[in-house]
Image 1 (tube, rainbow, N blue to C red):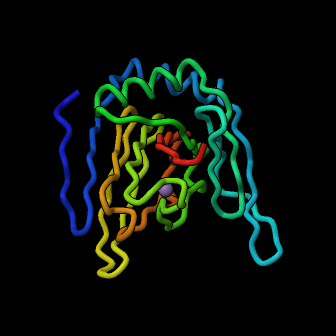
Image 2: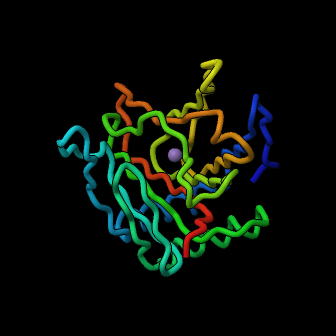
Image 3: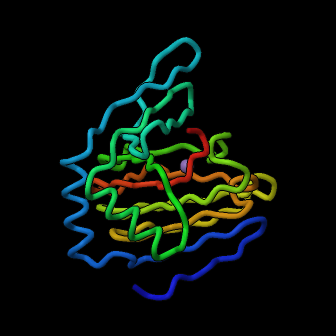
Length: 196
Ligand SMILES: [Mn+2]
C-alpha cells in the first residue's frame, strides 16, 4: 500500500488509497463477499409506488445496530469472518472505530446510486465513511451543493476511499450509470452508527 493521500477540497476532505489491498487479497475478498453475503433486492417507496433500487444491498454490524434511509430500515446481520477481517484492517490502519457496514452490489453499468448525502442522524454530526471497493472499477462523483463543482474519483479493485470532516454537509455523491461494458462491483461502506 502506498501512502494515503489526503485531498483537501472546499468544505471537506477525502482520502483515496487505490491499492489498499493487493490483487490476490482483493480477488479473494470479492469472491467471498459475492457468495457469502445475503444480498437482497430492496424497494424504494415513491409516490405510492414501489421501485426496485438499481443495485443489491446488505447491512451487517454489531448486534442491535440499524440504519434507515428512503423509508427502509436495515437491522444489522451478524459479522462474517471476512467482514470482521476487513473491519479490523481498517480500524488498525486508520486508528478509528467502526461498527457496521452498508454494502451495495452493482451487477453491471445499469446499476447505480443517485446523488445523495450520508447525513442520516444515526451517523452523528461529521461522519467518517470508509468505502472499500472490489470488482469492476466504476467512477464515483462528488458534487458541491452550492458551487456545483464536480470531482471524479475512479474506485478500483482493492481501493479505499474515506470521506470525512464536514464533507457530507456540503457535497453530494453518486455512482452514475455507464454505457461501458463493466462487470460486477461491490462496495462496502463502513460506518460508526450511534444508535444502540
Ligand atoms: Mn452514500
